[in-house]
Image (tube, rainbow, N blue to C red; front, side):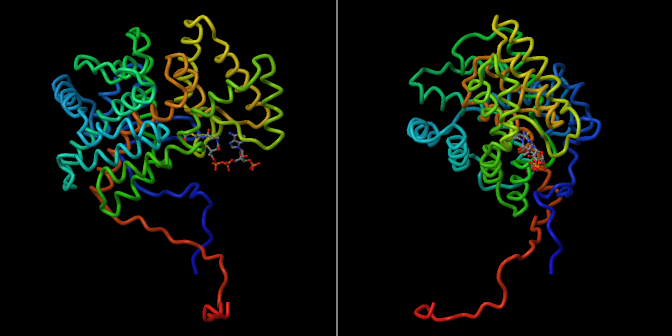
Length: 373
Ligand code: ACO
């Protein structure tokens, strides 16, 4: 008979990884040994993706090669292109991304190879294509034209241009790039675990990423950033504290708070709070930032809970002009770099992931023919 399960696999070590590490008590996060506070604002998303997928921060020549690979890799196949309008008409953003990434697997030039080098190239293509898919989806559903990505610009700059239809300021690009860095990887979070479970059957890269996208969508994981914004929009700015107390008293969860691993401030939230403050002031109307601060104070006072990565990301994306229902897709744009690196890592030292379960159903049932049931 199996042991009692640990509900939600809390504190269960499910894999070994050299990609990222969390010290939940101290509130620290590392990508391949680099402190997130050293990377944020100083390392670009492209450098971070290279760090995760190739194992090192790139030098200039490596970054030029990787950047060129990303530019080449972002063109979409005919099957994906032709299906975007219908998918955009019928599916929400995360479902659409799940479908489009699945379709892109059918057109990947190395779809039949699971070799490490092929998967590294697929990782670059998926990382390059994800922001384009979000932008093309958004353009299709709004009937707008989408600007062509500029090969001279970063993923962050191109994405903001394509989504907002205007030239972002250098500061907006820097802020958004930092957001992408902050979301790139995070140990055995639910979507990464889903990707690794799929990869561990020796399934292919695109299948594992589809599993991850479906898992990120839920409001207890990546979907929380959208819910944070919807909560803020639904609150009266003059009655935030009481409204939050009422929600907590009614047993409601406040989206964007709490974390399975961090017992103190999530180090990513520290940066996102600062950026939300800055962008709120620069916009001339920092109401949502101030409401967020008030929510943070009340939730901490009432429940001792800290904001997680999703809480201040919501207002940062809002101030950058990103539509609310694209907040979770933005998360996927960044996390693609980590998911793909985890698939490569899983394949490098694979064993099928197949845990046990505790049986809690009936026993010793007597079978009867269908007419006697
Ligand atoms: N608001 C109110 N109460 C909360 C919250 C919250 N956001 N988070 C946890 N709690 C309470 C729970 O009600 C529970 O209280 P109880 O013991 O009195 O029943 C206790 O804290 C423990 O909560 P669990 O949900 O059991 O903690 P778990 O580790 O399973 O869940 C999670 C972590 C899912 C992040 C949780 O804190 C939550 O639901 N937060 C809101 C959703 C969210 O922001 N998700 C994004 C997480 S970050 C990411 O995935 C990118």
